[in-house]
View 1 (cartoon, rainbow, N blue to C red):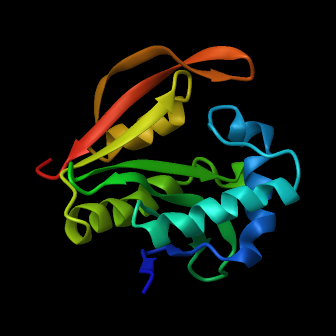
View 2 (view 1 turned 90 degrees about the vertical axis):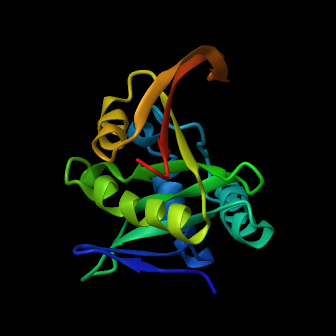
Length: 175
């Protein structure tokens, strides 16, 4: 059974095929994809991302949730764990929000539920996050949640034909 979580303001629920339009809105928005590694030009192409979300859970390599307003169920963004490595007891945290919800502490609030799930249910020891250089808001949210900045990988990935650098953050189960 796919877990769902509630906070004071949010509901984290399973991403369903009916959410594809909102996923497309987010992952095609220039403000969101400026610092995000996945983007889509068409609604149809976003089907690939929908399959990815579903296959994470089926394969046991992670779980992603839609972040919703608790009262209205309005879709705000998504967050989750992927690249789960059971032997090493680690996974990667990712998140994004539709721009109109930025600056309201939504990622900070929702992230705790995902971290608790990772550490307490999946028995992870380490949760990592990779943040593109320049993405100050994501870095602040991670630091505020107790992640440690471990360093920067320079020119580690190609994005739009140019090399980008990624900050490495991690939180251990005992922190």
